[in-house]
Every structure is written in structure tokens, then in C-alpha cells.
Image (cartoon, rainbow, N blue to C red):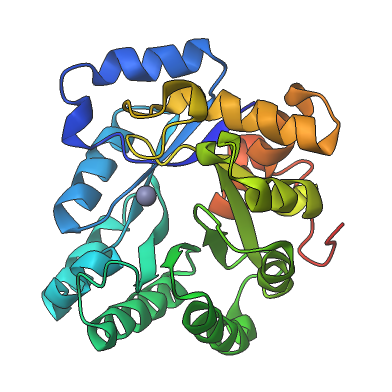
Length: 277
Ligand SMILES: [Zn+2]
């Protein structure tokens, strides 16, 4: 088992060869793809992709870059898209104070509105956080305190996509119910801190992702990333943890299945939220 917990297969960079890309990944051992939206149109495309393929699941939401465009009508549309059984989370949502393509207040507004939506739908959230460690953690820890009241027992609240913080912050997120996702960039020579996180977090709270077409691994740096390369993140994580790649593939797939409620693979040995080691 191997799940790419975050990719953008709906991106136009895959328009010419999407089926080949999917097949290459399956041939490399990928058994599940979580296709994440970043605006309303890409969310709709993610659902369309997932509807036609049993191994593809969709996440719907508006990225902080586009926060300023998010209207109440968009929230209704996301809500309706989430009616599909193939929609497994709300995202990617969060804060990006690196590029600040939307004003900070607008980013926070959109973040809160979509957290509310996720909570009402009992869906986990996929979080994007860049140069906003403090602010994101503050919002999510408050969210945890509010949401936990009626949240299904033993279900994570979400996942920190492309986690770029240190081990201490990773453990704080795990404490409030967030899975840590290790991207293919963990293979970069200067990604020492990310490898420390990959080595230092409890395995049941770790997932792997490509963020394809973005963030290619070291071996194809500068080119388009694709889900088949999630195996490179797996190899790197296996190396720093001193375990077999198959173990990392299976363990992270179980975690993704637990988080996203992919019952067919996740349930039998799904970890409990209380267990953090
Ligand atoms: Zn992404």
C-alpha cells in the first residue's frame, strides 16, 4: 500500500498525459491518490477525477492565495461538492504569509469559514501554512478546543501538508490531532530539518505526499513532479528511520486511510488517536 496524500492531478500540467501519469504511479506501487483543490474550479475538477476512479479521492477548498475571492456562494458550492462520497476533506486551506497574495485578514477569514464548514461536515482539513507557524498553530489549537466537543472519537482533525517546521512544532500539532505530511522535497540536500521531522515523529502520525506537479524530488529537480515519485519520499524516510521502505509505505498509507476515512484499507488496524507512539 502507498498513498500520495496530496497531489494536484487536476492541474493543467497533466492535461496531455494524465492517464499515463496515473498508470506510472500505479506501476510504482501507488494505491491511492488524494487530489486536492485550491479554488472552486480545481475542487470541482478533483471531484470529477475521483468520481471516475476508485483509487482517487478528492479534497475541496480555497487556498490562502485566493482567500480574497471566497464568497458565501463559494462556501455553498464547496458544501454541495462535499456531498460526493469521494470527497474526504476540506482543503487546502490555511495561511501563506510568504507570498501574501491575499491580505492577511482575508486569509484568516477564509481559513475560519472553511474550518467551520469542515467541522459541520465532520471532515478533516488539509492545511497549507507558509511563514505563518505561530498564527496557524494558534488558530488550529483553538479550532481543536472547539471542535473536539462533537468530533468523532479517534479521528484526526487534519493534516499539515508539506510540513516545514521543526520536530517540536510537529509534536505539538500531533498533540492536537494533526497528521504530519512529509513531501518529496525531503530528498533535497538542504532539507535536514525535514529529515529530522521524518525521523522524529511517531510513525502512526506521518503521511507522505508529492504536491505534484510542484516540489519535485532531488532526482528530477526543476521538472514536473508526479505521484510516482512519492516513492522517493518513502525511501528517504525509510533511510532516516532505519526501516524498510515497504514498512513506511504501508504505515503511511494506513495513516492516510485513517485520516481520510478510506475504510476499505484503513479500518482493521487503524491507530487510535490516543496512541501517539
Ligand atoms: Zn498543494
